[in-house]
Length: 257
Image: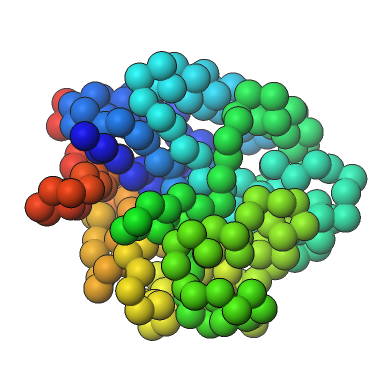
């Protein structure tokens, strides 16, 4: 039976990894999907981010012995996975990269490029579309593909190619200080609720919530982010998705602590 565990933004917190492993084992997950923003944190340093990148890759490799692991790309990850000294990297840096540690970029890029394979912008099946921040109708309307809005077609609209990734990075909406239709790297919870395409079930991170929350087919899972003083915003809950069962979605936590 397919059992998928969705996990919100990690933001370079190694203490979260054992919690995820324990929960995945307890709920018998067949796949773990990390919803982006692997990198950056309030208290991170360039050195700690390099160490985190190695630790995270070690963890992914170990977990892939037991489950499939999908790592989605968040806005905080983009500057680290674009090659430095390229036009796309420069475009992202010019747009603004809050929390980014440029001195660690080349080393983190090398680690992820050599070890963190299969990073994705979206994951989908017949029922659910997962991305870092979510797809608004306005952003989808801006793509000249003329395709029906289905998860399969949306995946064609938002590939992980460097130029398109940089383009999406430079499209934040008003809620995040921009003036564009919010892209799936930047869409705020408020923007997604106000403009959610009919018929989609979406699972996202990006906007911190106190617990995994459902609003009319939108599942918000950023429960592991913290305030600048290190205090948690959420309860570190995760979302278990089991297609073909009732209910298909269950909120789960690590109860071992």
